[in-house]
Image 1 (cartoon, rainbow, N blue to C red):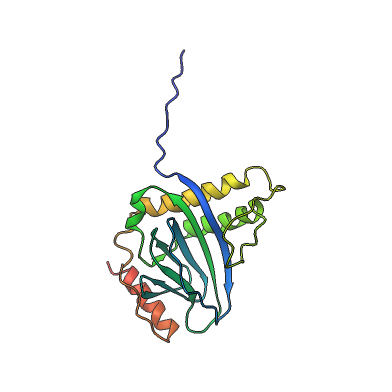
Image 2: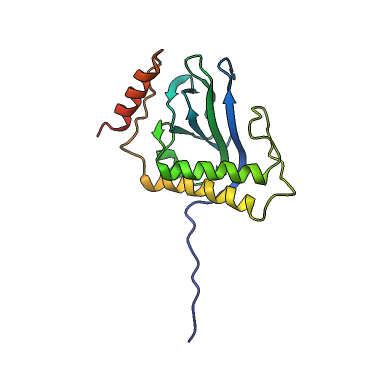
Length: 198
C-alpha cells in the first residue's frame, strides 16, 4: 500500500515577530506615538486604555483588544488618570484578511485570552528582554530557553490571529471609537452596547 502525503495550505504565517510586551502603565504615562510597517495588537488586561489611531481616541475596556494596521500613527496610554496593564505584541504577516478586524474595539473571548496568556509565558522563556520595558526595540533570544519556546510564541500568535480571522469579526464590534468620558462604567456600558448591537 502506497501512502500519499499532501501539502497543507497555511492561511496564516507570521513571518517575524517584533515585540511581545506586558506593560504596567503608571497613571501619568504618556507616549507621543509611533508608526511602523507591521501589525500590532493592544489588549487591555487591567483597567482602561486610551488608544489613539490617526488622531482618533478610543477607550479600550479591560478584556478587550484592538488590532492596529501597518503604517497607522498610534499611541497607547492609561485612561482616566488610573494605572493600567496591557499586553502588546507586534508581528509581520502578509494576510490582508486581518484588515477586517483592524480598527475595532473587540471583546476578547476565553480562547483568545488563553492564547495571550500562553504567548506571554512562552515569550518570557524565549527572550531575555524584559517584557515590561516600554522603549525596547529588539527582542534578545534567551540561550537558556526551553526547547521550542520560540515555536510556541509563533504558534500562539498565529492561533490568536487565525481566531480573529475565522470569526470574521464583522458584526460584534464597531469601527467607531468609543466616546471619551470620565466615567469608566459608562465607557464599559457603551463598549458592551457597541459590541452587542445585533
